[in-house]
Image (tube, rainbow, N blue to C red; front, side):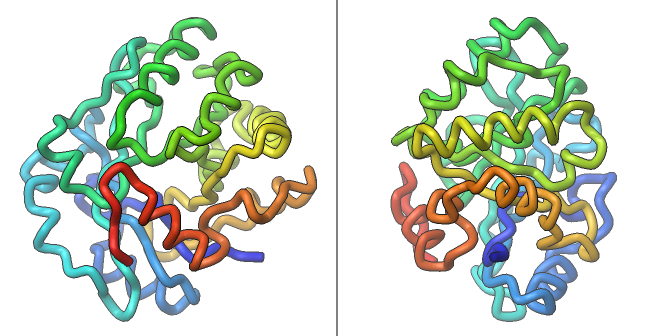
Length: 240
């Protein structure tokens, strides 16, 4: 089992990343991926792309080196009501939107505050993915929140990069995986690559899902037809 689409990647528009979108797509093609999403950091992060970057995403072609390129952003949850840092007029033009906690954009709070923020985020129709939800500094009420993703049109991300450096991420996500399986919550497995050399590198996350006997049919980006259905089911459908 492997992914066909890597829907969380960063280009040099995020200043601590190291590849152009052409380089990212070229390496994706070499590794057999059919699709990538360009999800550079939104303005609340210090290294964020300038807001003009997000206005100009329509200039990116749908295909580069035969790889479908989805344009979007990794937005930041910026308060405990679940608001994010890009306006609706930009979000509605995007193909794929990730929403994540970053301590640079919001001070870690209590489990209860994080839980409320996620519930608020779930109300935003333009968000597709809850990004890297596992770190200890942003714990939430897993048992209460995870079932809320069922039929929400949003996916929980298993972020391979996060497992390697965010404290608690891997073990917390092991528990989240079991809850997703129990409640039939769909997930997406991504690299969070900040370099062309890591596009599609998600083995550590796939291994964790195998270890807990996770149902493969709940992973939207390991099957191209399943992934296309996810795009067509968005609040604003995306044609592959």
